[in-house]
Length: 297
Image (cartoon, rainbow, N blue to C red; front, side, top):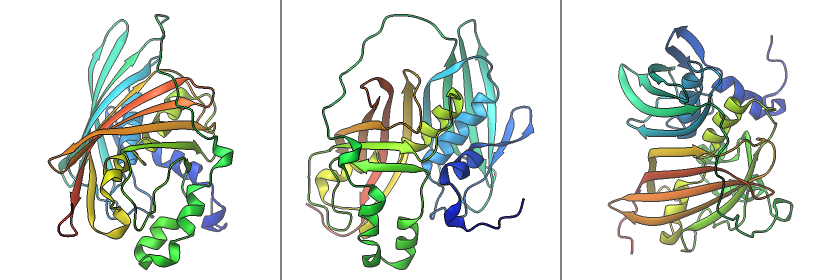
């Protein structure tokens, strides 16, 4: 196939699906690549999603219910990432996998994931917050485009590029000069194109998206943005629990809060709801948030 159409005509979700379609190089070894538009380091959500794909390639007839991951070293977007899967255990109801991501001969990331056969059981859930609907909110892409010409060219190009996930923040901050607000944010999001009823792929897309705004929650009270160049931030760990099925191209509400920041780290929690109020996933993450602009109150 020749790449005759302009890049702008390509659906970014198709690029994301291609990104998640790992190459099998041995029974438990897989190879993934990064997009040409990667920033200085590989996006954390990409590594989470690819690692979950690698784990899924070694499991049959079971669905992931939880994953726990650590980011060890920054990923190099210029070279492939090798994912090595350890088939830790296959029980009657649960399967456990450990995935190690390797670049330059060193671990950059590891993930443990657990998979379960479908079962019926007790059910309850937290109530979804009452927030404005996505149709009543501006697109994040519009908010970004409004300040594109105020940014350095290198940041502006990255800032404005097409993304596979459409985001509509309920309570956005100013990107350049944010006022301090409480460490809570609500974000509607959806994939720009669906992946059907493929539960494993849907979960991998959701894992990718879950890293997009979560860490920002912990810097909201401190009046600083990564766009300013005064903030060093990076995900340190990431955990997800999947509670039920969902459609990636339907609107999902990501409600996030940060109970604590200390020691140059911010702790964040997230709950992901379908539009009709069903809780489908929970997320927790701690990340590095180091101020590099001098004294900060």
